[in-house]
Image 1 (spheres, rainbow, N blue to C red):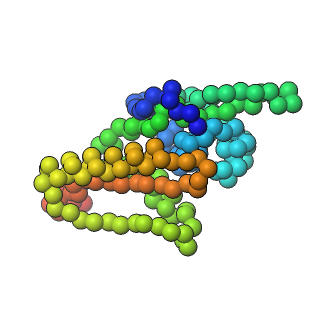
Image 2: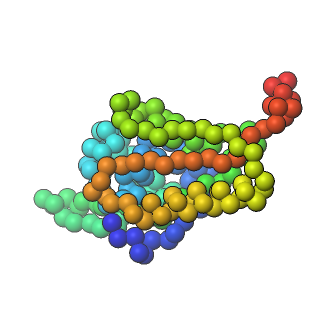
Amino acid sequence: MPTDDLPETFHVTTDEQLRAVSNLTRHRIMAVLRFELATITQIAARVGLAKGSSSYHVRLLERAGLVKVVRTRKVRGVTERYYAMAARAIALPDPGEGGPDVLMRHAVADLEASPADGERHVRMAHLRLTEGQFAELGARLEALADEYRELSDPSLPDASLVFALFHPARPEQAEGDAK
């Protein structure tokens, strides 16, 4: 899909936009549109939805500015709309202290729904890093994700890459939250 004219990043700033991206079905629709133009019928088939449900979710995404119509054509008297993402990437607001991170919830749901017999690379590592090492690792992970996103070929099967680099709550903070 040509993405030369797309903005690099769409910043989610309104409650309407946040509600739109917080839904797992709409997350999966955006995953389809990230690499290819698609009609409501094509989206429905790829995501496993009825056409009416697909249309409802795409309309919400379009109203929030996250997807847009990029091409239309007449087919037997009906105007067929092709949708695409409104930007190459979506930046979500910080969920705030104790707030659920929508990306991680969607990533876990997608991982749980993926074929159990398929190849997976899942790992959790606890590290002790200086602030400089922490920043460097974060930058390297983002650069690696960007590099492979540029190599993505829409004709190949989907693959998801999710990472989270963060400082966990200290035990005394976690205990205080539990009281």
